[in-house]
Amino acid sequence: MNSLEVNCAGETLQLFAARAAFWAKRKTLLIADTHLGKASAFRHAGIAVPEQVTDADLQRLSNLLTFTQAARLVVLGDLFHARAGKSEATIKSVHIWREQHLELQIDLLIGNHDRATGDLPNDWNIRATEEFREPPLLFAHEAREAEDAFGLFGHVHPAIFCDRMRLPCFHFWNDGGMLPAFGSFTGTHPIKPAAGDTVFAVRGDEIADVSNLLRCR
Image (cartoon, rainbow, N blue to C red; front, side):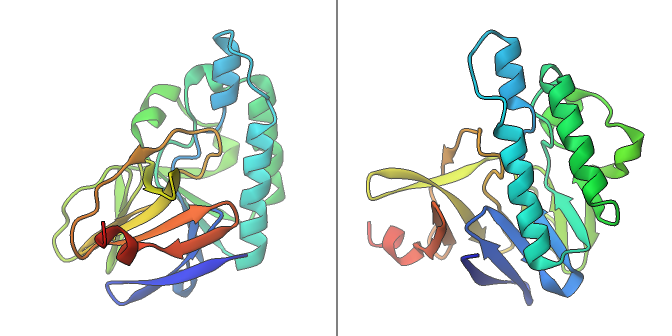
């Protein structure tokens, strides 16, 4: 799997083109904004969207877990997209996936969509909280200032324009960073990095540091 490394307050994160980060020191895989069931929610609203999106994203997640041998998964918010997206087929897919990873610890940082989608099944054994710290890192869904901590967030679905394409990206600044949306059926939001920020763009199976390219514009 194509990846690059970034230093966050002395901690090394491995960034994957599959739109995930791995904190090897803690055997922790980080993803943000999976928005599971979004296709089902659209179908519920009468919009024709392939139902297989959730299965494909779960398989990509399984591949990452196998490759990294992660013992913990941290989801930086918005696990599900909407209450209407919790279709029987979606719940069944997630249940099967969870049974395949019973030993995996899962922590969910509650996002704005999570608050509207209702409780998760108890047997999925997912711990949900607003934020938590593992010095020197802080995890939350929405970006916030945190004294003496380097924050890692989701929510925005960051992207940049490169070669006339809008590409999802990882965005890091002095005391924080933002992961791209993991879900393949999600929108993106163009960002405007400040001087000194670091940006890693994802294009298919490739990931590249485009910070200098952006500064030249």
